[in-house]
Length: 186
Image (cartoon, rainbow, N blue to C red; front, side, top):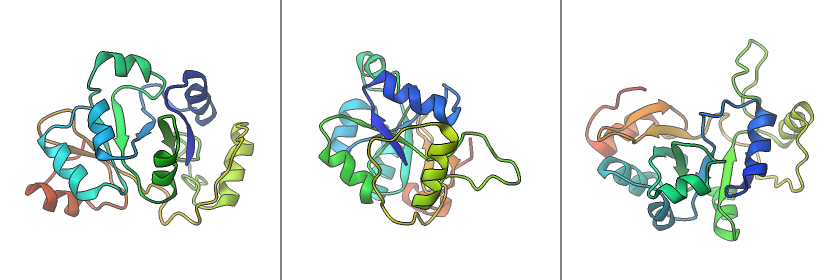
């Protein structure tokens, strides 16, 4: 993952630029806990069920910001907000920092050609991304080999009925079991 201070527009902007990421595609706001997430974002009934079932973990939820000033303060992250309470190294980082953490995978956005390996899963692949993107990382934390390139499952919770945007390590059947219904794809 590539991370930055979520309240630092310049730092987040450098991630968007390096990844060639569309501005409408939010970075993940990595909250240290569900309680902190609830201070920043509106969680409807289904979002709350999913968060309680799968956080900390590999699930990110597209959520509306709770207050307009939160959206304005974190415009660098993007709108809608993409929130997670992560596990592992990313979760530890969010819990130990004094600033909010924005994160995304280490790869060039939208490069789905035949030679595209997808997001980095090893430290060597992170270094390849840094070289290709021109990003200078003041700190690199080796969290080990990531079990999947797209590990975060993303669920859109802007409406009363949550919809799957992208599947990752949290399987769509697990989401359906938690909500008691099948989820449609966005």
